[in-house]
Length: 167
Image (cartoon, rainbow, N blue to C red; front, side, top):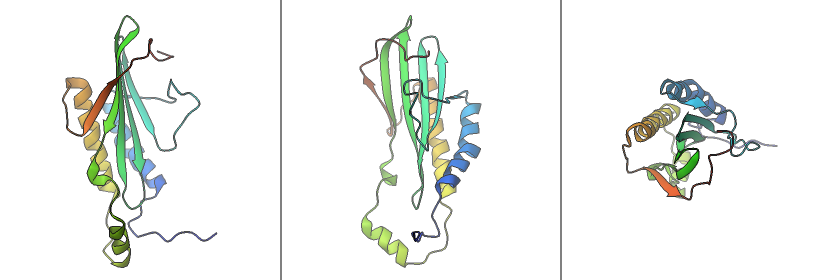
């Protein structure tokens, strides 16, 4: 089977995972997040690229997940969840993440043009990790101080009647 020709700027999946493991996981651990080995709600499910963290206190559970896109437009996404409650009963569940429309799909003609015009090799991994670190700090400010940001959104949904299993 013939492999597809990739641009010189291509960032491999294993390189993204290694950079997240090297840069963002220690940063999250320094902020007090704990690595989640398995998601308590979906024990059989494990996504290939995700890195999950949580902080648990008596009436509050905070969840943070990193996921990534590799290739010619590498990026790092955040998924967030917040359970708050009283006496073991969840009273409010919010879920959401960080959205950045500037990193969404580009027009088809840009990709074609980029393939035909030779440009010097660019480092795309470094800026992607820097955006991930910035988004981690925005999420931290939201969870710690309630600081809002236009691209960081959590929506209230119907709470489960109890805390997730395992808490």
